Length: 321
Ligand code: MN
Ligand code: MN
Image 1 (cartoon, rainbow, N blue to C red):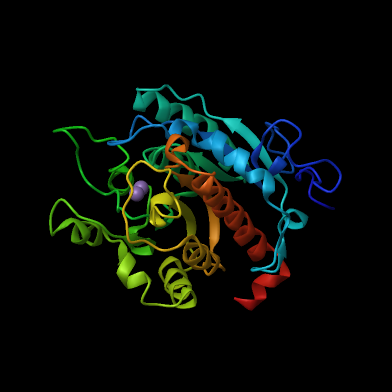
Image 2 (tube, rainbow, N blue to C red; image 1 turned 180 degrees about the vertical axis):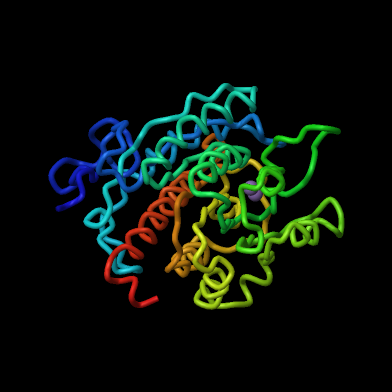
């Protein structure tokens, strides 16, 4: 049986036509015969600096119209393997993080319970906590593979604020949503608040690789490290576009110069084959500061590479990993 849901054929209808969904997928709210649901999570008032990532899902969907169905890097015809839908957006509440978290979790948890992999389009990184609450409620604690220039494991901001885009992964550990010993953070760089910041993440149990350390290795070696860390655990991929150098991804809220190129970032991501993914997100796209859709195109490609990794594992090609 071919997958039930797949993108419109851009050799039959021009890709600039139709209502915008991710990759020209059907906008469907169903779980039957669905492998992956793309969900917009347009919340940005967890950001501590520039806001505007609430328009990220819209921008990523727009940029994603150019995606084609065959990933030659991974050798997989993504939509011949996976049935994928664009589920629409969570009904977030701008300025109010706890009801937004509740809305996101309420939307995602039934999807996860139905065996659907969720692919969130952010939104600032605070949304990851709500995604992990939903997925861990179904699957149990997850491994985390995080691409980000920041660890997002700080404790509080502005005195006692525990929920921001700088804190979700500390909260997730505290809430028992993650398996830190199976989790890895890749790409930390830029000035820190204190010398202890990176060690704080390691003390939580995470493996941490700075940008400098990541770029000393080949993508294949990093992929092997990620596989060795995650093992056979069910895993969540969280890709903050500020992992990439702002020269390639300028439209983001908390840029850190001196990062990987978009090519390097994609090669690192493609190397993460052989992992049992149950969810992912691509976050921190801020279209008002983007130029020529650079950041939105990157985010669309990252989302596509995640679909490709899932398809790769499910197809015969996975024997190569
Ligand atoms: Mn982040
Ligand atoms: Mn970041």
